[in-house]
Image (cartoon, rainbow, N blue to C red; front, side, top):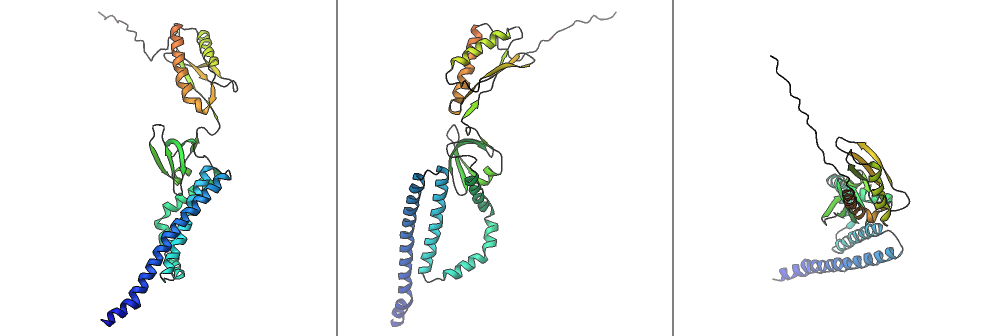
Length: 272
């Protein structure tokens, strides 16, 4: 009985105390890490840094602080942290190979932050997906589609492909192709479309819009209409202008033909 009490006092009680201390260090340290990260985020935001960079640095800060807390908790248990780090370092190659995709995504995230091909709120087409950028994480980029679906894309998939930043330049050109019949008057059609474009206050005066004959297609004479608008007005102008052109051309008796073929039949007389 005395041996059991001695064992408890000698081994179990000290380890229990160390374990409680380690848990306290972890819990308090985690709370302090969150507080420091929150304060850092607010400070960086007030400094005028880009929101994308602020979020990335905040995530990185929290991760590094959490690692420090875990190491402190382990050290309080009496485990030699230096030896532990040496063991981890020795196994670094195997871990690196196992986590090569994650490391690649982290490096890609750093490249996105440095070169800044887009920022939060931009509409981009990257990795085969179109969406609005919500967040640049340490390993992935978060976006949402126009119909409000979440896209979680690895950073390496973003940076290693072609990135189309749709609204980075502030203005966009609306490209419309309007087909009219071969029997219709091209000048009349151009006058009608020009009046509609000039009447729309959302269409920019500079650069000036252009209109002309694009091609003589199989069933129609195709006109190109290319007005410039602010990026935010692109879809509204495109849809409304297309509808207005259709209505006005119909009222003027100008047809917008659909693909068709004329079949000519020739009767061949039978030889006697």
